[in-house]
Image (cartoon, rainbow over all chains, first blue to last red):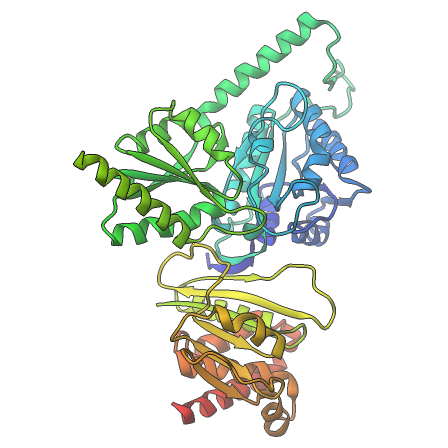
Length: 357
Length: 182
């Protein structure tokens, strides 16, 4: 296969088609517009359906319907649009239906801005809508990884009967990078879905619902969901970079992790033992891998394009054993290697002084 | 090698495609590349710009705040980006449309009246951007002419491939003009 130069949004859209996605319902918003733009042309070519709905709320409910009938379906949006979709996402999680939701994050709150940010972290990993539920959240850092995770996202959604979110940002959506697309698998088999509403002729009807008026029944359902989220732990993924001897570990995901990786090399060139841990799944959070990566660390710094959201999960998953510091920019600004290096040097100097005492 | 390039001009002058050509050419030479447009709300006739990175190493953030090469095709772009340049970098400017002297003394400047040259010598002002791109190839040497020509075949839609020779001519003209100043 040859590498081609593709915009993140377009590469993701093509990867979705190659993963068997045939239905897309969405509503435009920057910085993810190339996804619907691309799929509007591409899906009819493969016998699929593209609908630009009248609103995000309509779009997510169309996803609910298509998922209920057993189709591979997705939607995409950015911050404000994802907020509008939360009601539907909660229903889909409650009804245990598989689908993929893409959020190319931009700055918030409210309308915020249109430049890249990671400020929807909490919304993505803590559920987002009402009720006790979780999404599987995948956070690619390159366009190649975004493409590779697309097939995985649909597989995980089917396996767990749960919505999966791809949490990107304006950088990953808008940039062009070299990418190798998976080959089109014409014999792709989507797992059978005996629960789907495909017409009840000759069998008892399947019912898709999220309403449980009997509290005992709902509790049973809630506990079943919890067990499912517990099982998802085995899907956790993370990447380590030069953490074997790292006394200071940077933790970041997505675009912020790209900057952090460059900082590791620059820090090492200055003789600082720096490493990087990059969670690829944000829910489930790769707790064991994080702890392993930080086993020699005196300090941990989260590099994030949010005001201290990732840091809460890092502290919690490190069980408060290592001091965790924050370094980030927000509102559409990107942290620079210079900012992060400065923070590292301050901490390294403090460590040095501590040893003298 | 790390080239962090900002290309800027009016919408329609071809800065986005110049950037894509550079990124594709870098890819042809097995380098790490990235391209990202400014995607803010822009008005018709306003300025457009993109950031291109060509590197031996993985690209960290594709958004460039301090370019070591700046290619500007109109005056507002010069005014906006000149101050951010890294010292010792290259500033390539289209003097057909920019009647302003660069302020920076610590960067290399190459001024070229690319629109006039394109009109006079090639009878087509729309390849002015290719003349500047040719100058870039000669001055910086980050990518070769052949790689850019290969990239052209990918960036130009097939029904425009009749324009390949003209674009090549414009690139070669830029290379020749830049060679004279080196």
